[in-house]
Length: 256
Image 1 (tube, helix red, strand yellow):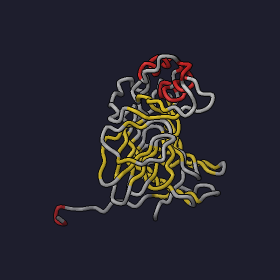
Image 2 (image 1 turned 90 degrees about the vertical axis):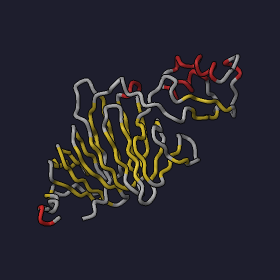
Image 3 (image 1 turned 30 degrees about the vertical axis):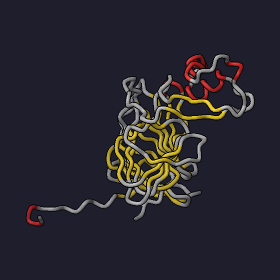
Image 4 (image 1 turned 180 degrees about the vertical axis):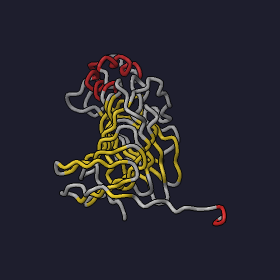
């Protein structure tokens, strides 16, 4: 069965302060809008309004009152802010776009992804993302994912899988941790330390759980999907009763 899939996945995780993979692309360029101040810009892009003096200094602006609508400002990605995810593997053709930009560029290793950044993979292409708690998201060919939100201290990170297929290896929940949310259009799945696979499309959804347990919800109905089981969701309908996944073929030494 093809798991065409639309789902939200909620995962609690421990935030690691040692998450220090550097973003090879250091800057994003933003345009000042009417009513913007350096404090507002610092809060939006650096999640800390008190960072405005550093932003002022970086752009070599003598007076904060000199910023005007239409002015371009450089915002260093590593100024008071850690990426939501870092690219640790890439094969084939894959592209990314920064928030509020329509320009797609080639993905590279150690690329840091921030709020509202997007990644898409081409045919026969893969991209692996690593989160702060060492959770791994493996984006499969012809997939499209968006980093939606990261709150201060990375307590919550939200991704949207618009289309395609994603494999995830999620680290276990810790009492001091935050929350990871993966969205697609049709369902909700709550995960606490598991290995699973999902596919996303506009019309249908499917999930295969390979380790741990996933709670899948849609239309106010929740089903528990344990290890070795899967479920399927049509948009606008409840998840079906979990079913056993096909067992992998057994191979003996005589077959080799």
